[in-house]
Image (cartoon, rainbow, N blue to C red; front, side, top):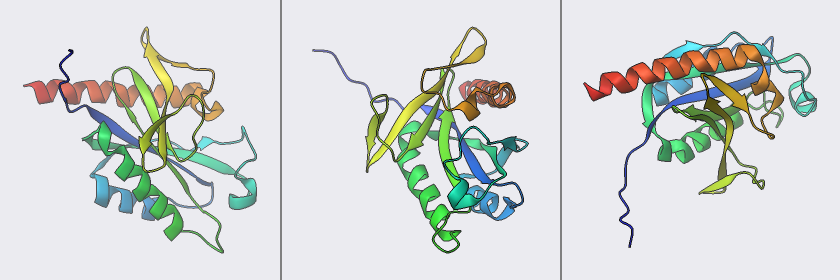
Length: 178
């Protein structure tokens, strides 16, 4: 029989913040930082015009800002992260409509994983009614799309930002090994 060895897999937490362009993310970032530690990188807001899915709830002119955290976390902690982000979304609702949509995920050496509440054929259950998917995979020095990759993650400037986070993640792993 094969021997199972439990190993902690430490990953680089990211959270994508979908929000109307005119809304500031300072309060959201502060709450996230208090819970998950120092925010190491903040992207410029990327246009989010690939779908009108959120327009009724958030209005038009929506952007996505991605934040990355200095502290590494265990990948098994993502359930807690996703539930915390759902609570923050609820706290900032106005007239039962979200002002912010928070999509947590992580980067490791091989991929970008996103957590979600929506089950689909390509998503794996992580318990508590939550799922994870490989959204991008790292191959030959770059992040590559999969057939279900969201259009906003296909943007070259998003992939470039995620590569910056991956490079810093590699440095963190080297520092840990010393």
